[in-house]
Length: 210
Image (cartoon, rainbow, N blue to C red; front, side):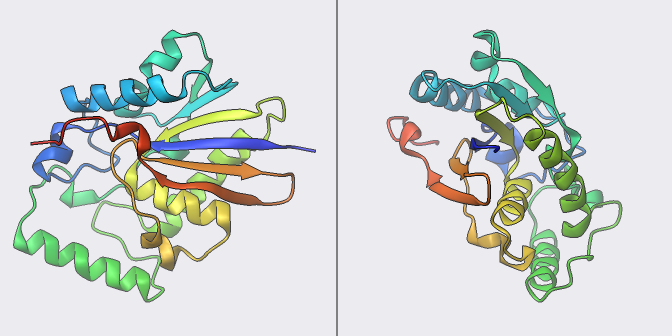
């Protein structure tokens, strides 16, 4: 029987996050100084967990976030299924009233059940979840990996948690997140269960971001 505990975190802050610029799968941004500090704070809080494996996306902001775990010798794999949702023509664009209106509209459509909607050149929630299922199959195909650290992206993490818990993607926004927030999910051989929800305790000692 496969029994696992998944420690799922979002990557640390980038300048794109700080400035409100849309990232997505097509933007391979690096962590800024605060993002590096956030990753260090998570390492300090969780380095004693006996992680068997780390899974990250193919975007360097996830690898940089868990850099200290990798340096400590924990094996890791990159899975494209953990990449962020592709936002198409909006990637790299600043937050403007027009852009915010477009995002609000498409998210309303997703909540209403039209999960094939996407921006030009981007991905729909259904398309993203299809590649997330492939990533999950890889992760679950290793029964010897009992404690697994997963570093991924905000919107993708919301959809991934829907996949794990079996709830509709229309409810994706029920999973709040910030940079390097933790969702701890256990698997007992039958079902996934969220053991820690949106846990940011390891970040509380950090000075506010200015």
